Image 1 (cartoon, one colour):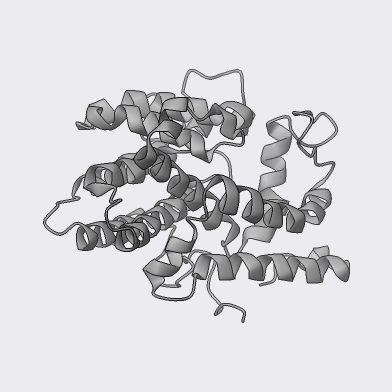
Image 2 (tube, rainbow, N blue to C red):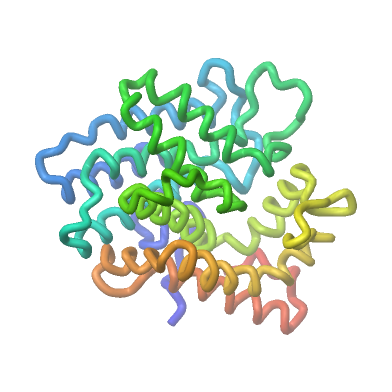
Length: 305
């Protein structure tokens, strides 16, 4: 069954405006404080405020976000998904609890997992943050390493700068120490899953792939005539080629990353919602809609929901 119609600024439940930092901060705090009774997550408000400053160009030493796919809405959507996955996991895994400190580390990392796309003010070499596509995760880790001590979260620096690599293209870069620690690995798989399911469940996912993701790939050197990347990566020749490849990409992500590499933790979203997994339902709807368009060669109607 297709999900209920929703506007492009709303989350999969059609209840949270994921373009509004305060709305997302409020929703995340409510989830965390309900799960961890008696723990004050007021720090989330500060983290979201600083995230908003960074992406708006008001954070010292950094320019505003200048890309349209990995933008502030994407990050807020991922952060909300991360809170929901954490809640679903904690409620379904007695004896394997992550606890409030690791949960906070997960939220903080979600908020800044794409900070590596943000250009520093001294950066005059690149005209767009997408130029850092291939190295943005390492840059995000460095930002977290600089930022967390400034807000009294130095104790989370190690775990945050390790689990952020679960959001990257190359999972071989995940630090061995992270894989070796069961709790840290689980937190990382939840984060990597949140990053994937939030973007693929976006009601405008298909249009954003065509209009924004492709141009980021071109700027990052992994698409277009000048595109080049590792031998096992597709180099997209055009925006239409990217769309034609997207259904196979979605199914590959579900089977390889979500099910295998990330241990199927996307199922905890269903536990949070108390039944249907709204993220997976929306992802499959996006995939089926795109396949219908492709079969009828109607790529010009991509903007329609």
